[in-house]
Picture 1 (spheres, rainbow, N blue to C red):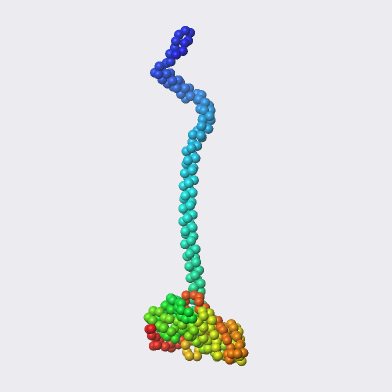
Picture 2 (picture 1 turned 180 degrees about the vertical axis):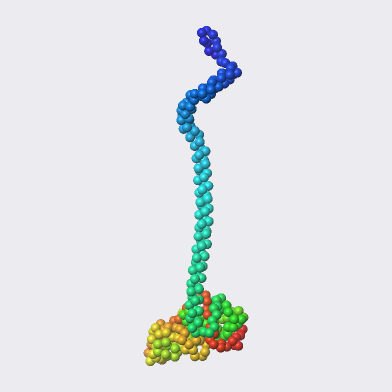
Amino acid sequence: MITVFGRSLGAPSPLTRLILLSAFSVALMMLDHRGHHLEKIRAGLSTLAYPIQLVAAAPAYVGRHMADFFTTRGTLREDNEKLLAERHVLLARLLQFEALKEENQRLRQMLVSAAQVADKIIAAELVEVSAEPFTRKVVVSKGSREGVYVGQAVIDAHGIMGQVTQVAAGVSRVTLITDAGHAIPVLNNRSGLRALVFGTGHPDTVKVPYLTAITDIKEGDLLVSSGMGGTFPPGYPVARIVKIVHDPNESFLSITAKPAAQLNHGKQVLLIWRGNAPQSESKTK
C-alpha cells in the first residue's frame, strides 16, 4: 500500500490487473498490426535473446553430438573388425590359390615330361610318407583299380622317383630310389658308361659303387636310366654326380650323387605305362 496526497492507495485487485493487461495487450497488437511499430523492438529483443538461446541449447547440442560421436566410433570399430576379418579370409584364399597355381604348374611339367616316355600316364596324390629311418617309401592314392602293377615306374617332372613295390585296391606303396634296398641301372649321359645307382637311406643322396679310378666319370655328370630290365624308361634323368673320392687304400671310388627328381617336394607323382605294361601282374598285398 502506498500513500498519495494523503490518501492510501492499495494494490489493484487481480481482476483489475487482468483487465488492464489485456487491454494493453490488445492495444499493442492493434498498433503493431496497423503500423508495425513493434518490429524493431522484437528484432532488438531477438538479438539480445540469441546468446541466451545458444546457452540454453548448448547442453542438448553437445549431448546429441557426443552420442553421434560414440555411435559413429562404435560403428567404425565394428566395420574395421569386419573388414580385417574379411581381409584375413581373402589372404588365406589367395595363399591357397597361389599354392594351387604352383601345384598345377608342377603337374603340367610332369605331364609334359611323362608324355615323352610313356604311352599312358596317371597322376597320383601322396597319402603317406614312411617315417622309418633309412627307409624311403611313400604311399600313393592309386591302386589295382586303376591298373597299377608291381614294378611300375614312378616319376616327376625332373627325374625318376622310384617304383611300385606293393599294390592294394585303392593305394600303392612306392619305394624311392634313395631307399637303402633300391638299385637302378644307369648310363653316364656324357661318356655312355654303364653303372648302378643304389639308395643310401638318406633323403637326398644315392651312391654309385664298383667303379675304379680309371673309370671315365666326373663330378657334374648326369646319370640317366639305361632301360635295362624293362622297369624304367631309357634316357630319363636319375641322378647327378656331386662328389668323387679316390682313396688309394680302396679298390673302388666313393661316388656320391644327388637324385634328379624332387623326392621331398610336391604332393603328386606320375605312374607311367610303357607299351604293353604287364597288367596281368597287378596284385594286392
